[in-house]
Length: 319
Image (cartoon, rainbow, N blue to C red; front, side, top):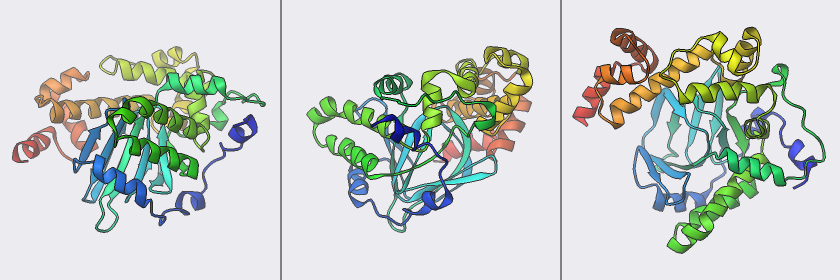
């Protein structure tokens, strides 16, 4: 791949491109995932580090989610993501990319009688950096400025190269030896193919650590590591080496949220995980993620998720 190819693959995805393959079946990929995605309504971890498979036989309503940095590939059915007044569809013809933890709203749709099937690849920034260092960039990419920032989440068209790499990864799981020996190389190739896609700008900025987007991502990393702590805008702007006003605007361009809104969503998502996965009591979960007032936590939790912490715990007991 030369630099011309990489530079020319980073234009914004058009509506036509995000829907042109929506009815294109990916039968082979879906059949392979039928064998691997065995847990309905959840995910199964692959023996290969950084990969997991998901299945859902039921349509799910629009609800808040927190995606960790990754590449989401759907083989059957489709998902709709909602963020900042924009809606993006990811399906057999489009995969989703985000290099940061991203709170947004999502709904899922099985394909008729077939379940929603897909896989999620965790993004490894060190691996991206290594790949970038080996790519011959004949044209120096200018550091992104506030004026040309884009949301740090979005679809890329599923081209034949990405599809073939994904199928090879799935086929490797038929052999324990191939899983162990070839699996990591296929995950690396999927990272490479994503770098050739429409989300290359955000991946490059996140991996190389320069430009306005990278400055904001540094602040986001601080928030992710220490979400329990108290932050103010000035403190976060200083960590990004930006003025408060420039930081606030750039942050919203990238996440569609203000810094404090983003932090609140991260805290609430982490608290929900503690309640659901670790069976933690609501007041303890609230304290764990940085809330000092249990009543404020309950109000904000219900406003965000549409149900109270008590509702979530009741659902768990009745399941």
